[in-house]
Image (tube, rainbow, N blue to C red):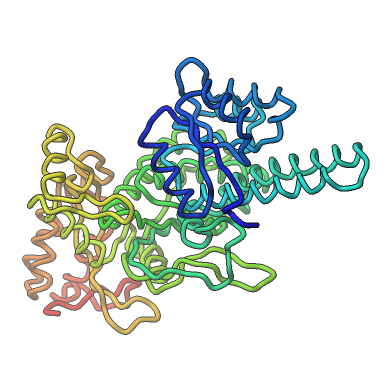
Length: 489
């Protein structure tokens, strides 16, 4: 099918939109005619029936829905495919578009490749309809064929919408840039991102203590809460792993910062969930552990020709999972790697010096733009300016790795504090760590004892107290579950 033989009517009361769409379609080989309002669109369509209409909704006198209804009542024009192209993104407007018998509904700002793919798809389907109408089949068969094609279009749209519930849009933009039919096994892009792993403590025992339906119910409620926290901070869920969540943050250069804020929000949301934990037949409140790491990974499709899945592959995934498992060992809720802390510090330094922070899809093109943004948000600074509270806890060699890494416990953000007692004792704790590192065990022990007096449930301070006593010969050496880093490293 040659695009040069096809004419598309573009209807929009904004001249800039008309020019943009005409140029875009011309590059694809389509012929275009235009109309500035609904009344003119009906006149143009009557005089020169187009092959397809791109129709704006919000126009003076006659809106797009009314234009569509008028066309559907015209025997000569009722079969012309119509794609609504509008800024209206509410469900009521989308429903009205379907009730007006529009073929598709795309919201502005639109994805250029998606729009062109839908135009090509609908034109091709319409050509099939036309050929069916010209066949020697009876009028009854022609009618049935048209109904089937219309149903297929609607089903295709419904399936596309449902498909996005299983595969996030962030995946589709990479593995299906030209539509779902363009997905190929092995497609992938390599980039830097931050991975967050979240796991429910004692899930096996919980599941064994209640029926599967109860477990299913509270798990969905829990996942819903966690999903909100992740998406609110520019992340998306790669997959649910039984009782665990793997989330990816990739949207900005400060994706590590977004991951930290999401983790803090998840812990806060868990507290709200636990207020009514008994209604889910849970015997006690839930606890979760979270691990976060930043690194290089490949986002793409993996599997076979008969069964493939979208996924993230790379050392960053394994490391984030290992860090999450360490939260059990150290008795804390969130552990992050030194790469995450380093990225956050760079991000915050850039924001303080007004250095532009470019995003993958929305870059701040000049320092002036960035400064204006800071000026406009003096009372409510951008998220990456928020203070992050964390503390160094150890230097460990993760399972399966050879090089030791520094790990940190996340305590909260300036506006969302999840470990207030640990923040209150942060100065004392850091002095204890400094003494430990320099082999001053007596001084370190005193600081850690002060921490424990102020916060008796600080497990990490307790671990260092025990190690300091062993170094001072106050208690016999024994094998610990936690091999804290030796001093002077």
